Amino acid sequence: MSTLDTPADSLDPLALRRDSLPLRGRTALVTGASRRRGIGCAVARRLVAYGASVYLHHHVPHDAGQPWGADPEGPEGVAAYVREARADPAARVVHGPGDLAGPEAPAELIGTAAEALGGRLDILVANHALSGSDGTLHTVDAAMLDAHWAVDTRSVVLLVQAYARLRAALPDRTPGGRIVMMTSGQDLGGGMPEEIAYGLAKGALASATRSLATSLADLAVTVNTVNPGPVDTGYLTGSAYEAIAALFPAGRWGMPDDPARLIAWLASDEAEWITGQIIDSEGGFRR
Image (cartoon, rainbow, N blue to C red):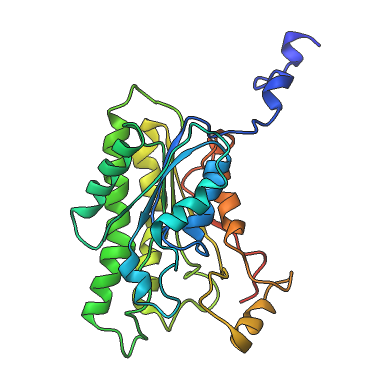
């Protein structure tokens, strides 16, 4: 084959082989990782299985006030569960609390996580959200709207801001910068008429995805948002659970590791050309 016939992006065959630990040496903060049955915990397990060190953020009082309750083994039990999946013995798994409703809390969390992981933060997965305290158009009030805005939207944008400032202090275009936000399919099907405050807050994140991606492009950071669809995290049982399962072509709910696999891939170098996207990981859910 002549030089003119060689594709411009031709790679050595060895470069095409997948690394078994694609995140070795990388560091990650996963927010809302306080329950072993949750998406945040599943994401953290995938990241450490790929070689990353992870800081687990939790806010136990939130879960304790929900019908499903807090994890019976507490934050250290969750951390131990994540450590079981660790592939690199040198990788660290640490955890700490944080109420992200306060305006200063996001920047403080970024600083704490970076310090605990050796001074650098490569991956931010903003998985936390406020559950409850919501209503329909006829019952929602200013307090509900403000509460969801503070936790579900404002805190995420402030986390991204603090993360960006941390990355800006690194040498130019340090590779491996990844941000993944979470949304809830509020723009699909019939929307979320029973959860107006939550739907609005998550919709704002979806709308901001491309703007944030553009803002961080010069830092070699990708920004994407994942809609995991209905995931079995233990919040629904009985006939209602079965009715939702029937809406999936596979006949089952999404499991926490379903979106976790996508998020872990987005955190890897294989996804370096994917940014500014809202990606549905719903298993064909029929609304």
